[in-house]
Length: 485
Image (tube, one colour):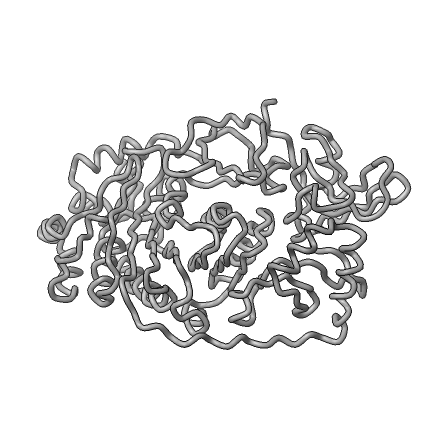
């Protein structure tokens, strides 16, 4: 079995965790990997998806069958559920976001952890999700849209760009850092092709740079969670120790979750260095007195000890710091072609939305046109420009006409609209709608929110017993009902 791994991988693993851990890892490696699913807490559905036991370190989370086709179910399109590797849910649990906070997910794509944070915050406060890779950031924005997160913005920049706008701003920051991905080798064997000892050092340097930027954006008294999906101590314990040494007001606090192993202590790291020259070289480059950092406070998931893949999680708490002056807001210009979007939206809202929903929108958000789209913005989103997704998109210009945005539909509940076309789960019209087809209806006229058992799918325009489909063309595809009900 050893031959599937890159040269040097086994030696580093055995030096770090021991021969018996390697044998146990190999036994787990040949077993099928596990899958997990989170249920949207505001869109709970009473359907059976071959879901197994609850995942013990996350709320509204369950193990699911390998054979399940949940990702192709209409309820996935409606943002009722999210497929996610089980141990990848743990960092957000350690971050423990609560309502009303300002939270940053700094390396956020594809959005599993962001949607988990947003669900725990229940659409309050301000959540900023960032990924510097354009394609990954687009996927991130799409997942956030599907979950109906109204107070979440998406950035597509390097961390340094955010630091200038958000000094001492966030109550909590998640850094799920780019890494060598050793914990995913079972699920993604092709990832082994990119693993080298030299790349571990490069990764560690990059991870430290990201943490340094995150530090500047964290409030005194705030917490920062650093996580990777890799095993080796070079990208984990040693990164944490070096970061703590250069930022003495950042203290590691204990992380303890079910089925999680404690991270290596400084003494264990020294023993690892005696067995592996590459680790010893990394230790030699550490600041003096690095072994005073309680690296064992962090935790690590191994696939041989849990129903999941590999993950490392550390939590830092910022004890004190110098507050930076608040940044002024960046102004945005409204284009001449879209200057009437505000008026168009107000007219649409009077005809289609409930009075209560519109009042809540006006009291909790700043309404503003950016480019060809009319947005509802939170205060935090106004500190930086441009953003890929500055807030909840309400209306946009399409071929010279103002039309309601798909994001708005996915942020609504049936009680928020005057007209709903409620389709039953199992009704073929649900599948027809998601393919972009016109569907029949009765006694409806005008803009309608199309739902499946009350969960929003998108907009339709009802005329003469038929609903013209306004589901975005880029999202249209064939779905199938996966529930066993």
